[in-house]
Length: 345
Image 1 (cartoon, rainbow, N blue to C red):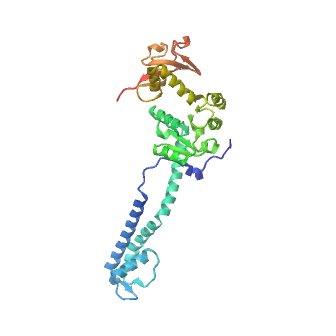
Image 2: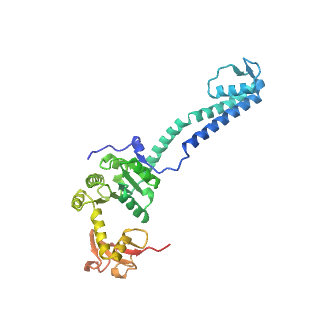
Image 3: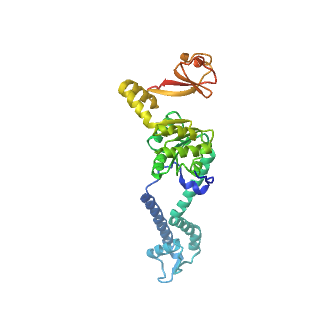
């Protein structure tokens, strides 16, 4: 585990914020070219209308081609001096009209460079504002199948997209997360500086959904070192690695392979029971498991008197099933885990 420095503006390029869809590059280039040609045509017309106020050293009088030539060399600041304004009106037009058009033309020519600089500054400003406003958010390490499912569940429970940060070493994965409206951080989550960019010290929840168990252990150790108070939930493939995750600081460890196997076995013995369990695990329709505080009206009463079905009571750090004698009477400081029916649309 390597300890890094606090990220600064130079690391903003590795934090990817959701962006609005931009116009295709060819369309942007075409639009700039059309504006540049429009400025050139307008300057040519202005000079030609006042052609009597100009002197052409080669031809004497100024024609349309000469006007276009003068407009081109003037807007590009080349200025050969073979055509010059001699009347007061022509000189005044150059000062008040052609000079501003020259500035516009130059801005169009260097527009790409200016746009890159402006976008970089805007990105740094957005990242700075994002960092200053982020509090009690959720950090999702890994945006594979497990990570995406965790995000979908959080969103279904009312968590705002702005309160979710995805960390993944693959830029394409982070780009997909930003397309989903999430903030992404590209980097190795076993490194402290990567988790600092995700503002993990200020996070309230951390979900470790990496592909490898050894990576999950290192990420959990690093996350717990940076944030002692956050709830850390980690997923592992093998049961034998679950104790190691708990020793590393994970509050909850979910064994993906064993959980899937138990669900398969239950479905074999009772397809209906397996369907109910799958329904409980899928948030947003049918039946949902919900943790909520005890209301004042429910305090002092039995869990069976609640409007929804109470399956467990959380009292301090103890988790009591509804059948335990200590859970027979609810207390105001308790939290209950209930099964609720999701209303159909």
